[in-house]
Length: 607
Image 1 (cartoon, helix red, strand yellow):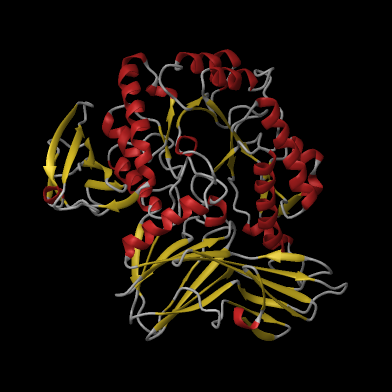
Image 2 (cartoon, rainbow, N blue to C red; image 1 turned 180 degrees about the horizontal axis):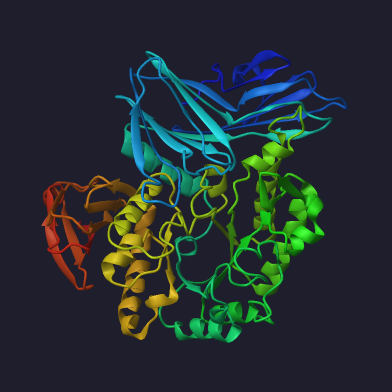
């Protein structure tokens, strides 16, 4: 049973007494449970999604005109689950922009084990932890997805026939001022029979209930990045217009303008909302041209830090958080409603005047030190709590103001991919690892990163800056991809580029299917499958250094007694068709004669 009203769901120390929040002992109104103690109202939202998924969220509000009693050690999720002995925890490491980031791992949890995890520096999937994990025993597997875009902390306490999972923020010891309220990390749980069924069930639950309500094409575009963060000669209006116009027939869905538009050099100009002098009309001519070519326009912003040379720093210093161990820039205080509303107005003006379709928000700052440094002496953790709530209010206000808008979530790549962030956004750059162009083994690592993330997050993709051969393109493709202009749009590659983009658009609906890794992610001959009801796609990638010419695979979700039509598209984008028995697909041998080559297999069950 995934939810038992009679069991503890959250816990905290309140007025020096341990308080357990048990739904059955609280007043129920719809999906929310309420309890009031000493003038503080505890609201525990517990929402069932079907029989296998549960969403939990805790908030507190001081209803009085006095300061509340002390609140400490808040576990906004604290549940015990029946289990067979010694379950296994499986997860992914956080993003660190290196080969070994975003790698899968597993650890046994024998009775008496205490497992803890938290990210680095205040961004939810940074370096040391990832806010999604499975706990699996012989009978079932559960996905736990943490919804907190800051410094969460999770613990698992394994006992002989159960385990307890707790989630909260890293450090809190505070009181609430009169009529003050706070929110805490949320949790989404999905239960399946085994590791694959729980992850795929979770993916489908997220797609249906906790993702931006947009089409597959809107959330998985083929994008062209224009201009240069480091060379203003490539950022003039005429140069950018030429890039957009010269690629109109390639088939790009989105024109992507990254950190190329604001006054000042990268990154000292972060905190400016005015355009470079070489862009007298801003980016509006570029977005107008994109729209006439039936493309959408993406523009990058970094709204959470400000350098001393910038307008935000010089004119709104009282709305910034300082940290005297980090003096090169300040943190914009989203915990102050006046601050996030000021930023909201600036961003709204940009969206309206520049006709922006995709708001790309970067965050190249670890905020934890700033929060801790600015906490009131006897209110530890309050800055973080209000900051994250302000960030959510900002995102929600943007989406309410601009219903067409897509938010692209970037934090030095993929360092803020938690559940609450991703239900409001997509990630077109799930790591900065591939940004400088990948070679050799790096291509393999990037493919591994994408596969590991996609087991939990359906809307992640990456940037590719290499030559457009099929292997390189397919290895970086994950239903969406952003392509750099050099050398992708060189005349010598034009026709091949068009064919690859056409193939990508054809394949992207598969990426909302069930994901199966048919080899280990570390395999140098790597194969994965996306399965829909009676059809699907298999991607085969033979990486550099692979000594094996053939991979033996068994497709999932296949009827052994059925017949299937196959379309095989090779490295040269030549396609052949064949009809096979389902049995053959469960014991299939795939051969690629050379390393750094690829093969796409599409299958469709016949009547």
